[in-house]
Image (cartoon, rainbow, N blue to C red):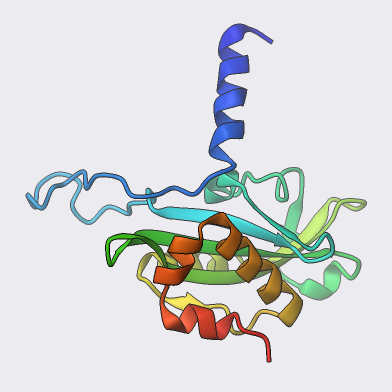
Length: 178
């Protein structure tokens, strides 16, 4: 591996450990070139590994090239992957609110992966639509199981308590376990 490849790998590793937070608006409100394009600068994919009891950021998910997804053929029918390991891909959008960054859009998408047979389940339309909904400041996590909610809540709180405090009340309510 040459120096350029090593630097690229190090950069990817560093990017995978943080949220995309607050970048400049490329259009600056001028209404010209670039207006209407999808801006992914403020969205971060967070995986919840239900069995491991942990959550982690993997920017590769923006292009379906995350560690979880690599080498897996995804099927449309969940029953075709009966021994799949459960994951949630959670799209987290961060924007400034009340003087600082906050979690403003959070949407969860179910998926399973069976490494032994190199197959998995996910609904690509659901993933794309939920990414869009997260960008539009929607909170859609109430359908997640309680274990996954607790993992995600702990991850978001531990990552940045200030962002959690400024987050929408609906997110806090939907991630509370009853």
